[in-house]
Image (tube, rainbow, N blue to C red; front, side, top):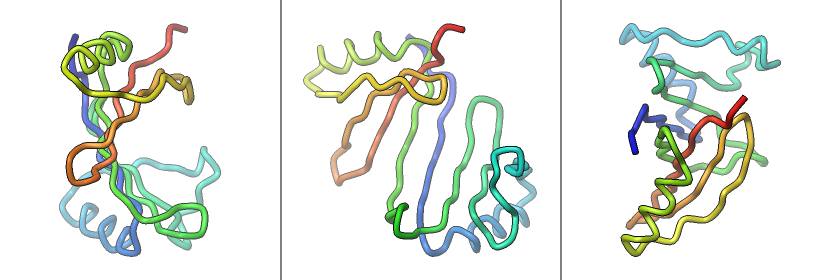
Length: 120
């Protein structure tokens, strides 16, 4: 079992300002136009770093405010078995976007997912 990366995803009314902050900090923003996401008005931003990244999305009717920690792993099924053996109850799996995904809620309500790439 190996952690390959961490994704931090936030949906909030401050997403555009946070994206501007990360731009000013010098992080490289991914071009989302290939996914049909326009740059203006602000519809979201992704700042990649290897297998890790930061996602910032504006809140709206279909996107309620919240924060999620996504842990990218080499084998989501093995991580799920390990979590269950240690008293946690991950929900899933769900296969989406080329990944196998499990969900948990951490103390304090933080949404946590862990996922691995599906075989090609």
